[in-house]
Image (cartoon, rainbow, N blue to C red; front, side, top):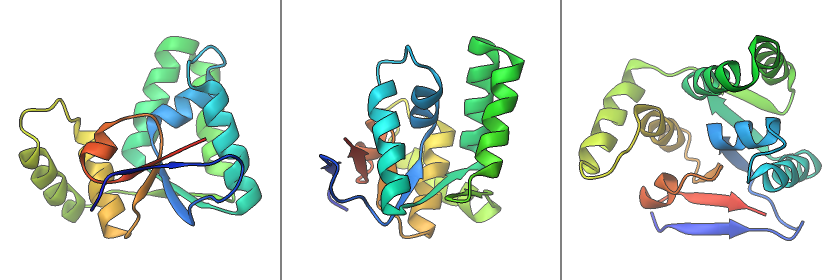
Length: 149
């Protein structure tokens, strides 16, 4: 898969995209360096009916981050909003994803690739999704596209 960066000026959006933890965190934290970009991407996804999905591991990562940096109420609110979104599905990882994630980790032994990212790659691969909404360059290193404003 060739690595590419999908950029948009408000035009085209991908049909389907995985939402990585960095996009969620940037959306929630107004002081995050990527907050405005995340807000633009989510608004564009809504306008263009982009099918968004995330994984239960990403949700866990986001919840933990928000809990320890913003408190229990914002962390709970993030979970409520993720659950309530009609444009988002949460993909629960499986043993097959785990096996694939181990292969992804083995493919990049010299990089600090997290298990959550490797599981995201496995889920994206299984869903034939080539685009992630986020700010983590590991997706590009693995050959996926990052969707950016």
